[in-house]
Image 1: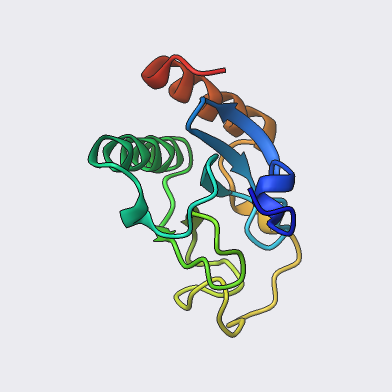
Image 2 (image 1 turned 120 degrees about the vertical axis):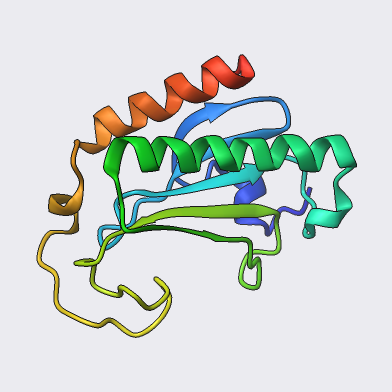
Length: 145
């Protein structure tokens, strides 16, 4: 594992759940509080580097994260992305989006569309409760820590 890779060196955010193959973290982004990442633990840069079974498990984790966000928050949309241009370590962004968020309908990396004082006010539940729902769903589906 490369020592210069931030996702090899540290969790990459608030650790929610972890298996031997992957981990789910919540990114600490004040503008987008319901921003989670599914990070593959082994240092690979491309999704196609995983075996078919690994790809399937990875996408099941992404889907579980998405479903928790939909159920708990009822966002306008969920954004999924696996860019890896800045950090070439396989990870999926799973982001709940709201019509009133600062960038909607643009991507979170795009140009802000409006000012927003407190993005956490867009959430139907608090982050601690959301994290608890996320952890419980992942533990139930994958028997992970």
